[in-house]
Length: 282
Image 1: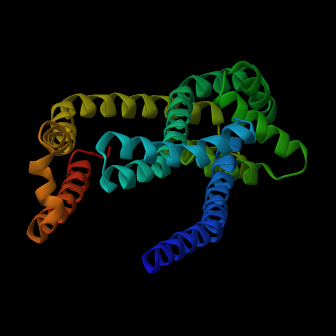
Image 2: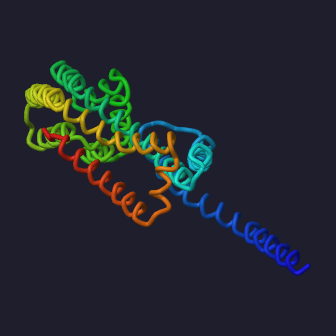
Image 3: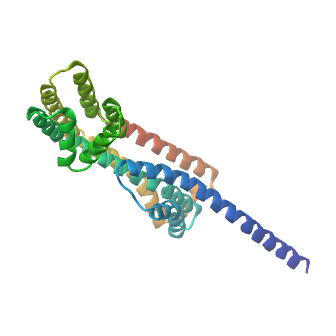
């Protein structure tokens, strides 16, 4: 009789804690994800990507929980649960970062064509503002979108130098810094913008050719680095799948836990060093 009462009290206590704790956890979890989602929304709006809020909420709220559940089902351990949860937190941020990087690279690839068109407009007798308007109409996104926003800001009364500064903040590129600096200097001193743009086109083309050559020469080293990053993780997953008992020793034994922790730290240090050594600045 006493055992039944104790069991009943334990079950009631667990139920009460779950009843009080789950809403608190969900509220705290929702608050964190909403803060992260607001930052992502600002980044997407800067890229002229206006996604529905409901889709973003689903991606940020559901993805970590879904991947955590999937990891627990596949690996049947807390490692899979924690790994899936961490991946769910990181994945949306990585997707947005990838979108930003792709847009920035596309913008940089359009700069040479944009400068050539800008130089042609100036030779035809248009003013600098008119040349930028033509460029915004003729060039495809993202260059056309960014210049259209620059022209809109200038039309609303913002100084042209400040408009260029805002553009440089949205697109922090070295080539764009050169262009903005050249435009500002030419506007203040009255230099020949056509010749300046022609020289910038030559400089940017030479820089692009040098960057492509460096990437070609370092592709083997970067590929080896990527393989070394993935190989230890893939091998650990393979061992856990083929014979979970061998991998379980690392989780149960204290020495195994230390070795597992050291291997994770070494992997992180190796990834950092490989990424730094394989990256050549031009």
